[in-house]
Image (cartoon, rainbow, N blue to C red; front, side, top):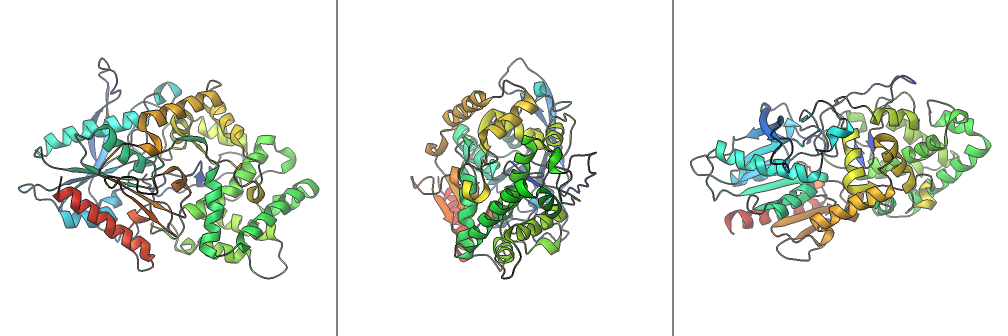
Length: 492
C-alpha cells in the first residue's frame, strides 16, 4: 500500500477534511514512503494495457495500469529472479524503486524490480468514475488476475526464460495479496514475502483495539498509560453530559455538540480512538516523515505526555494529543460530522486518496471494522459494528447490510483459506505492536511457509530501510527473510 505526499487543507463547513487515519488505513494507503530517500533518480511511470474483467471472456475492454521498473541490478544475459512489489489501497510511490529492504535484497540477488499499482488506486483508473456500477470490477481476485496477466506479459516483453523465478512482495493488504498470488497462481509465482498481511476476513475486528491497548503496555512496560487513557475517556463521558462546551473547546471541534446527531457523536469517539490506532500502527517505523517535528511522535513519548505528573486532568492531556494530530494533518478543527464524511465517501470522481474504494472493499470482501467492543473500558463503546454497517449502507445502498457483508466475508475466507491457507514458499512477517497481526499467520505451522513474529515492531516495519535505531529482532528478521529468499531462489 503505497503513498504519495498529499497536502490537505480543511475549510470548515465547506469541505469535509477526512482524517489521516480511517478504517485502519492511512490517508493514501497503509505503506508510507521509505525513509532514507536522498533525491536518487527515480524510474518513470510506464503503462500496461490491462483487461477490465478477467472473468468474462466476452468482455474485451482494456485500460492503462501504472507500473515502475528498476533494472539497474539485472543482467539480462544471465537472468536472475524478478521481484514484484504489489500495490495496494493507495498510489504507487516510485521511491520504493530505489529504497527499502526489497531493494537491498535485489542488489544481493541481482533481481529485476517491478512495482504494479493496484487497480482503482493512484493513477490506475479502469473506469470513468467510481460509481457503484463501476466499482464492481474492484476486488482482490481481479487484482490477482491483473498480476497474473501482467507477469505473463512482462515475461514476454523482457524475453525472460521459463525458469526465471518471480518473487512477490507486499505489505498490509498487498501482504495478503502476495500470499494469495502464490496460492492462486503457483505456476507464475515461485515464492512470496507477505508482510503484515491480514489473511482472515472478519466483519467485527474487535481485536484491533485490544492490540492497541496491549501495545501501550508492551512499549511502556506498565499499566499507567492505559489507566490514564481510561480515566480520560471516563472524564470525557461525564463532561459530555455535564459541560459539553469544555470538550468542544479542548478538542477543537468544528461544530457544537448541541447540533450533533447520534452518528456525529459516535464519529467523535471513533476519531479519538483512531488517533491512538494511528500512533500504535506506525510506531517507530522508518517511513519518510512529512514533517520532522512529528518524527518523535511515538507510543512512549505520547504516554509520557499522558502520565506526566501535575494537576492537569487526563482529558486535557488527551486533548493536547488530539491537537497534535489535527496540526499534523493540517486540520484547523476536528470535523466529526457524519453527514460530511458520508458525503465525501459518496463522491464518485477520481482522487488520489482512495478512501471510497477501500471502504467498498471492506463492505464487499473483508469487513475489518475496528469496533470498540473489545476495549469498552478504555475507549468506551460508542462505535460498535452497527455504526460501520450503517456507513456501508449510507454510502453504497441499503442492500449492503450486515447479512450482505457477513456473506462477503465468508466467501473471502472460503476462497483464500483464511489462516489455514495451503501455500508453500511464503514467509509471513508480523510485528507484535501492529494491530493487524491479530488477523495474520504469526506462528510457523509448516516449514515451507514459515512465520516471523517480531516483538516490539509495528506495521510493515521489516519492509522499510534499516536504521541504527532498529530493534535487534527487526534486524534479525530482515536477515532471516534474506535467508529464505536465498534458499528459494537458488533451490527449488
